[in-house]
Image (cartoon, rainbow, N blue to C red; front, side, top):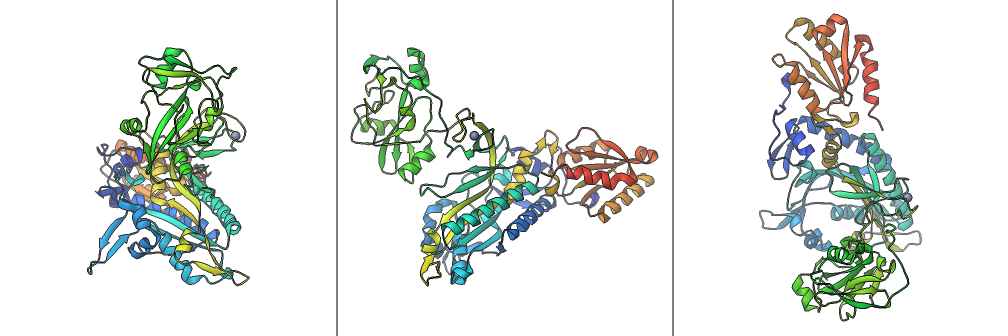
Length: 569
Ligand SMILES: [Zn+2]
């Protein structure tokens, strides 16, 4: 593509509205254009990368046995009423009405539609396993669309769904998909962590996320440096730090004037957080719940929600706490009855704790569980953090921030039971098919790739997903010797099968052209200039390298191939 004919123009200045690197750089590089909040037109630079990512996904999912379909975005609401997800999705789903005032939705996902397809086409175990996928536009009415393609209202997803005879068969499909996902991200040139993920209140089913490490990521992952454990922090388990233990002492009430927080107690009593207990009061659906946990550990609300099997969980208000007989600032499980009490397993490690007394300006010291208070349930509901021990080997866990780009999980039989998705087994008996679900945010992969791969000058594309592999720059292109040599190089590289962006502009300075090279971030730059022509060389520089190399024109193909291969994982 000749830059002189190219649609997109780069911007000299950063667009004001962009919050993240990918959003800012994609707008500045002319990759996309915003049409509304969270809604973008993809211009050629973005679309070329998206198509490359899609091609890699198609090859790997096809190789895993997938068959591509394309389901409608516009759907009658009845299927969603049948699954109950019209309510579950709430305001996140777009609703429209047709001319006969019938309610329709613009689908945010396709479990209902795919289950109807499988139900209509699968008769017996001979038709299974079945793996169907699509690459399609999804719509979600995000409350706060932000960060460009990272959280938009319209985006491209690859969603795949598997149908198997039973759990064991699903295990096999699930493993195959995990391997396909690893292949996809490796072939895109994007280092990605595969981590254990929360699988919701139903529990017991596998769920893994694929997280691309990036500073701007919203997800926190805990990773064992030995490589034997990685999990999303919201579901990670760990070996918590030890707390001091000594011979149990008698529980006594002490005056703690003004002490309302764990930090106040630590300061005034000369103890560590691990020698305190905190009591946290939650409103869980209609019920009130008191959680007791060691003072140095935070409650993990995802784990607590799964344990309680509730839809909504939030901290109780001070008014609700008082109404339940608690004293904010000195909330205590001691002597408390009549409400549900949950204890984190950390209260079993350490002793002679300082805890609340349910009286203002008083605490108990030497509190020991279970001698001095009771709980109804004891479970692991603490938040694991960096420095905690790996649950497999005990090594200190590292914390990594990242962006979720893929998710695989075992869905079970909810949708096949809902839509009558039965098959006949080899004994002639009807059983519901067992489903798995596998998503990749295609446009999100592009944005995440830029979050992961950029510097202060611009993007640093991994070669496999770069919109063009080579940025060919003609300096002093108004000189005939330059335009002739550059045109010939352009033709040669196209002939060799490279995607080339050719900056053939006559009026622009070397500075402007090199700034665009850095901003657009194509993997390799090739420069044709009067001086290079005189020396019989072309200049080749990888975007990621500081130094350029002068190579004989005849050696250009080999040099390029070697430079691009360096991005392969
Ligand atoms: Zn480990």
